[in-house]
Length: 167
Image (cartoon, rainbow, N blue to C red; front, top):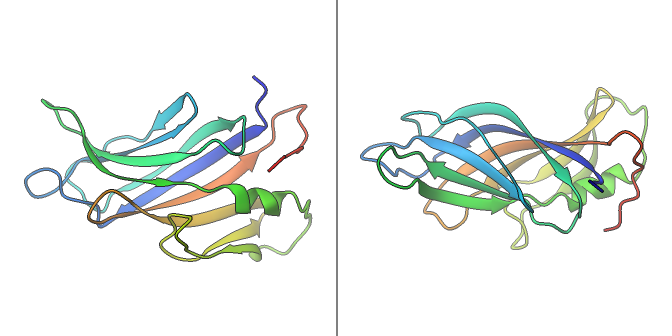
């Protein structure tokens, strides 16, 4: 497979998502990278859905875009787009490359601020917790009138693979 590792994306919730049906929407999230496509369940009649689902993709190339898209499930017509965002993992990978160990829980080891180059709605921190490095993000959806999605990312090494990242 030649993958560098696995990225777990915990899709927590949506906030103020666009209305695509009469008064509400039936949203679900799709995450795509390369030929991979994973998705959450549909949450009926809710523009502030809570998914709290873990989706996992393998990472072959750190430069491959990871796109999060939100759709409104429709029964008789094609599903409606509710916006999309790119998940930028490079700042997170830079923190992983530091090789840190044994830090106190809650230690912030990286900070990413919103910019024109990312989809962050608020600053995001890479944090050490219980022996793991995670990053929580609030992504502002693009190509839509409103909406944000909260996610958390975490890296998993594949057995027999080293972290020979090349960014």
